[in-house]
Image (cartoon, rainbow, N blue to C red; front, side):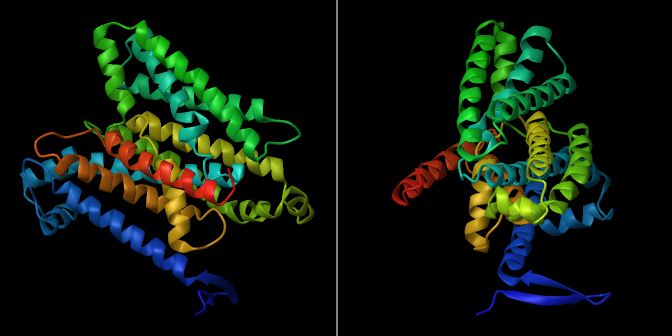
Length: 345
């Protein structure tokens, strides 16, 4: 059965469509948005999906409008945006490093963003917005350090992963030092932030993340064809007109900004960036980075994890980072076993 079809668009152009990948993306969109509607209706004041949709189009009561638009919708939107940012950021890092373990979790970007946030919390007792800026700055500094240290006539594969693991270990030690120097109040606040949570998220977190995604996602998608060509090797890609190192720099910067901004908005939510691209590739069975599928897979995973964290443990609501950490840890063990059996590690 053919999975690729040529689709004609206005202007006489034809576009190759991978039917399976397109179907997977549509199903992931439906899953992510459907789970979002259910999540908006979850809480002390439960609402049906029909009531939620009615309220979203401006036909709800005054109380429903307040609950949906002011209390619950911002949290869900932050979850969608954070998951999408981590999913596409993880896909970029894995494609650039050509390694399924080359995700921001393993490379230390989350730890770097955590270091920036901890510095603001512990040394300056900063506000929530200042903590978010500190996390963004920490992620950018860490990403720059990894790129510079991994450079040797270009940035390649396992060198990027190994340097990232080393930087992650150093930054983790710095984070531990900062925690030991903090007082009990700041330490408690820092630990809550380090877990990764969507509690208390409002429109102040939605708009910056939405604006950044609106700028960076089109940039990434515009370079997706060139990124796929790099899988044939740097020499072949360069012969075909791809400026390989410029491409890597642009895409790495985009990935760092996406993951750092996601961490700034919700804390270091673990393993979404690692698992989403791999799950998307297994579902689409399509070569290449699968950027759009990874983006929607990340969004679906985080919203579903938030739904589980609110509903699966009764009155006890866990931070979403705990749920993703448990599920992602199991997936990482499975991935390592699979890679070992295949002889790739």
